[in-house]
Picture 1 (cartoon, protein in one colour):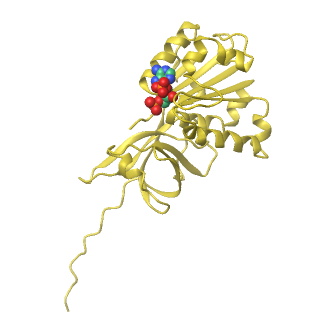
Picture 2: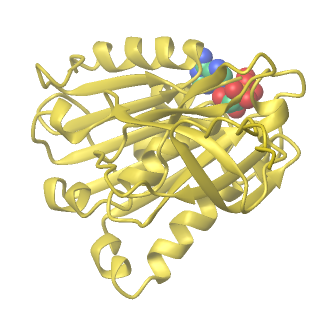
Picture 3: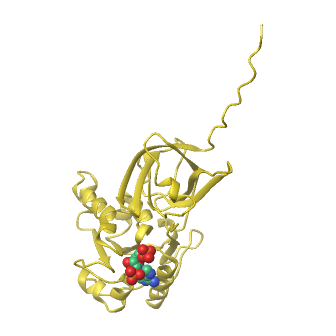
Length: 267
Ligand code: A2P
């Protein structure tokens, strides 16, 4: 008898997670869900490293905020598509049933633990920076800790607001969450390069006071307001200056204060 030679088995993908759903929002934006690893615990607002195996066989990983709430069975992510981006040029083609790599070690600064108690919480996002807030606006703790919750989202075009707008609408219509967010969650979308009811950078609307007058907020300061910021480097820098100017101090897990910042994934 002859013995079969050992067939080399393909190495199992490390930390594999199966894709369950993919949605393309614009030619630049898509969201997807993967099965949640059983052991994965995270705090709303945190990110994980996800990616694919690169051509050399080495994992190609990037930091992605978890957009789903901590109670959900699946993990949701919201991503830009960069035509020549090493990861997103390939990741944008994933389909249900495919596997991605997901390192199950959530971390990040956009967490409730990094802020001192306050009356209002502001989530300031540009572009895909809305992802961590998509998690936080579905977290009951957000509504237990604060009287008022403000989500601002600034994008170039109206279509880029769709992901956030649809999410906010779905929360308001949800029989359980609807009650929790009613009269507490305020959504403030703005566009900068296409006509919409509310135009301009959020930083400009803060400086000239229209953000606050539109929302009927009479004062903004460290006694009442807490903020989380997620966007491009330039956006984060400008927001930090505005928040510091209003008297808020940057917090961290180890030393909570009045605001926290994190860079959105951009490529
Ligand atoms: P703008 O069109 O005026 O640059 P991007 O797609 O480049 O990441 O930008 C997303 C949104 O963030 C755009 O509407 C953009 O406005 C806005 N933005 C970019 N930089 C800043 C900044 N420093 N302060 C406020 N908003 C910004």
